[in-house]
Image (cartoon, rainbow, N blue to C red; front, side):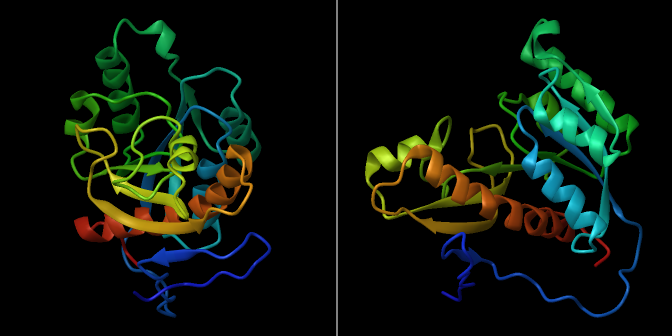
Length: 224
């Protein structure tokens, strides 16, 4: 399988599909409008914003929604000048009620695609049906292995030699939608959960913009 070898200080990695070359001319069509959902530090959210602003993704993050007040993602949105809305799950009677609020927020923002960039809540058919093939997730494992919570811990417990991350479309089964792009990260001797997670996260920042681009291209809504 063709591979992208990364010999940076972050360690070697393998990505598939390979990054696509810049076509060398301005993108045609309107920029993608992205909605992003985050619960924690928001580093993948920032990676998307930077990919848009640096021209690696023909789009803009139109709205960030967070569910934890004061989380790092909210702070990043303020620093980056991206509109941010708090939808605290504790203030909603059910998962469906929260997802109805998410749908309303992203429709108001006219989002073409919605990206779950560290959203630590299980979504319901309410959200999935509102954005068919337009709901993208990043997961810290080489799916279909190690679905669900603590994927990094699962990989270490299983003793695998390779872990990694996956960008995929979301369906009603947990972490089971169509795979868009993956990056494999070697598990090194003596790795802790924190060390391996940090290396995987660096690859997440690399492949998430590409996964969004591939999802948009499949729908015919991405101009590059």
